[in-house]
Image (cartoon, one colour):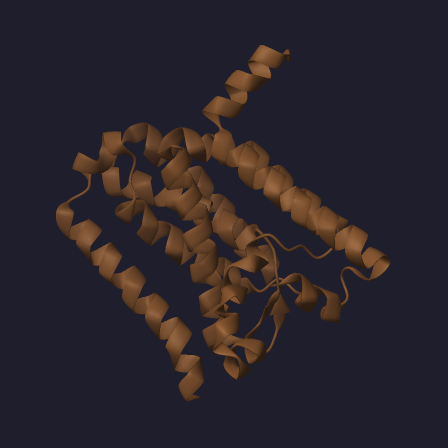
Length: 230
């Protein structure tokens, strides 16, 4: 691939490239800052991983719902998520466009971490997979909402991917929460109706978009506020 081809590829998939690069830079910062101890609980916390008690004690740390999207727990975790983002992300960016893709990626990640804050606030968790589940679910959702044959076909593939990964989560160990993935997927489905591709927006009934917007906002507020009343 020559320079012009790379330039065209970057222009076409700029959100995927930028998010992949940002994720890589954050992981390299973790690795060079903490070395072999980069995956220790305290250093994950210091790097910006999710930890509910910190938010409950100091609500200004609500940013911990955002930063875990870019924090990773080891080389394998980083490489798996970044490779998935780079290769599958381009397919999703083709469907939604760079701006909607970016918003879905970030907002579904925040939404998933907010669900973790509600259900399992005492864990330390991190990883881009929360946002990746949002992307998978958004493709499945847009296929369902629009009933477009091509989008339905790839949407079913992504739905199978979500189910298979959630099943595998049941047997996995570590600092990646299944509830983050579930929340990311729920957020992605709702955001598919809220932020559909321009070409398919007329295919989604207005009541779907209104309901999805209301559901996303109400659920997010509940996820974030209820832990303070437990």
